[in-house]
Length: 456
Ligand code: F0G
Image (cartoon, rainbow, N blue to C red; front, side, top):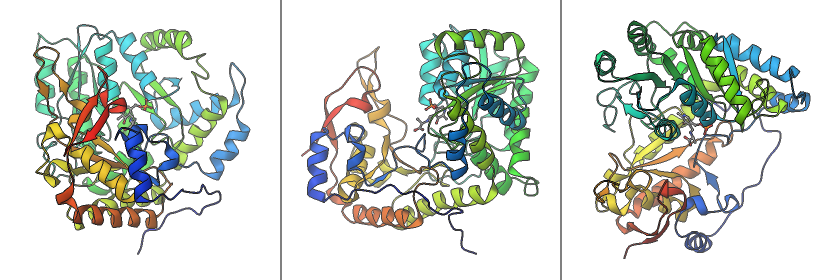
């Protein structure tokens, strides 16, 4: 049976069409950097799935119910009740988004001069570890970085290396953080067996085991559909078990919280939680709102109920897979299998004539925009390259990818079909796609503001 969007549309937001000539002028004005293009000039925005989803009528009703009391608001209790029911953690600390939870966690754990180990740290997670003087080490499962390798749980952490790292007396590991799903590794899930084993290894070595749980529901759905013995359990039940295996979690509600802003930090450690609350009060807000409005807490509480609904997840995962398989049909190699929230095109392979230092992922992003007003994001040498501070040598990323992230409940199948039509046009003209060079760039996070120009 055909899988359809399990909702109907009550409120619409018009999209603005532009011509190819207009888009060329817009890109030139933006110095060929899609982060600098105003959203009104984008037709289909696949830049991120974070904070870009559509809320339900229930969530909008919750917004009106939001209790804006400074302390002990009703909305806080409804938020706490749902987060506790789902995760079982003893302490729940609301934050304005995921990275605020990361900053507070690493500050209170004390990561200076220590190591944090992960399947793959998301950029902000790595940046927060490093900002506090720690070292972020990634140990994804072998094969995770081979785009064409087929594996149901490419988001797994490498258990052998985890054991080695924790047994190494020269490494002072502050915590292990398992990112589910693994965003930087292609939106790939981790299996329940892998999370169980990682938890057990951490417990044996007395090292706290955390989850970066932004996309926990998508991860749980993959467990339900792909892992032996899990098909008869509900996503809620699987999610609860996953959370029960951890000592705490960071959470950006902008993904599987189905809201536009919000997050939390959770922990079972009484002493740590007390320190975290103290820092929270200093920089985010009182512990019953943590930098959010009461209405935001209300919307998250409802979002966390809606996101585990299996009709929703079936449609969600199917729609991302539909995009991925469609791209492959027009000849674009992707990170296999398609992820939970995004499809990653292997731009390095698609444009073999464009070397890493000419940014093939970025060249492809510009081609998608010019051809159809679609915005996506390069994840490659433009994002992670730049001069090595020690040697001054230009570095390249391991892979040159283009991420097409799908906002939740926003675009219909015909929007995705349009993206695929545009992809076919881009693929037909691939021989004409040129690389880029940087004209001007800042020292840190250059992809956001760098000015570029097409090479001749
Ligand atoms: N962890 C993961 C795995 C993420 O994907 C993100 C955000 C964060 C933490 C930080 O959360 O944005 O609420 O502070 N990912 C977005 C993206 C920005 O586009 O993938 P935040």
